Length: 389
Image 1 (cartoon, rainbow, N blue to C red):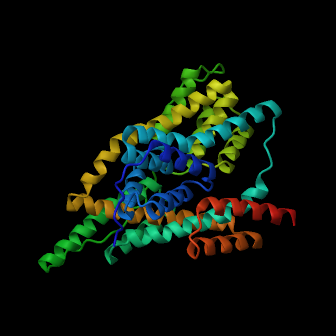
Image 2: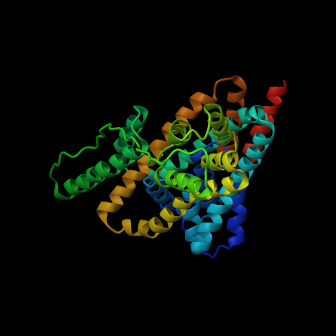
Image 3: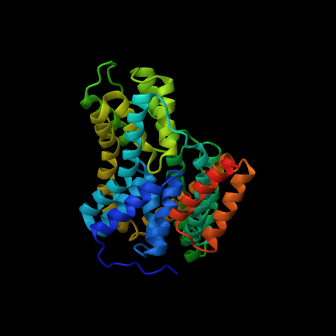
């Protein structure tokens, strides 16, 4: 049974403190961020029922932009309106933007990046445990009945075979809707309707817009480039890398391959949204003003998309067709998180220290319900200790 939603007023200060903290400790990418959000706003504070939280995840996965950052905006909007949307989103983005901007300054000044690998070796297994804990709770809420199981399995198989995330979620939502409503109809009418969920496996290539190549980069052109990326970017951080390599290196010649690799490394080992890679690149290309306009450009579309989408989501629950679509998309989103978690596990759990940290973190999550902030700090410390030993 869903827990009742806490509708008492939330101050902007409370939102700012919460999302700034999550921006500081938010290592591990979107799946980890959503896990931390679920722990804070569903389990600990009761601001959302798990079903509504899942509705937001499912809907957010279908629009462009960084999904976990857009989730923070949804939460802020529902708790404090427009002011909450900008407060939550801004405070989540700010720590990563400040860190990547500072690292951009160091990189331009000294040409090197700081050594953080020992800490990351401990943080990543701990974050993996946080994701597993959230996946367990969200999965139990998403799989409301056995009819949703084949939808989730089909989406997971499609994703494992390389289908684009948005295509898999859309197909899971539409075909799952037909399956769920068809099943309910046949049960009510005592007749048989041969509807079953299956997913085609198309790929969804992205066609970048072209800008004229120039070595002198005006701030407005830098802003428009990252605005375009933020407006059309679907999927994981790997899609962002493809955009940047194709345009900034190959088409415009603004960056070298090595500079792009260094920028990507910054985005990977700093907390918060990976799209703050744009802050680092903006600083490299045009100093502090470049960092500011690149950051504003890449995140501005997300604020607009969330403001448009959020009022629509509750209305979708009022129709049996759109409610079935949401249920199917929600279980598809959990399948996506599961596939991402497996991929992360294969890349992270490659040594016995990683397994030790992961095991301790799983125990802390499932048995002691420890907050993600302590897990990240503890993982970083253990990673450093194992590195020293």
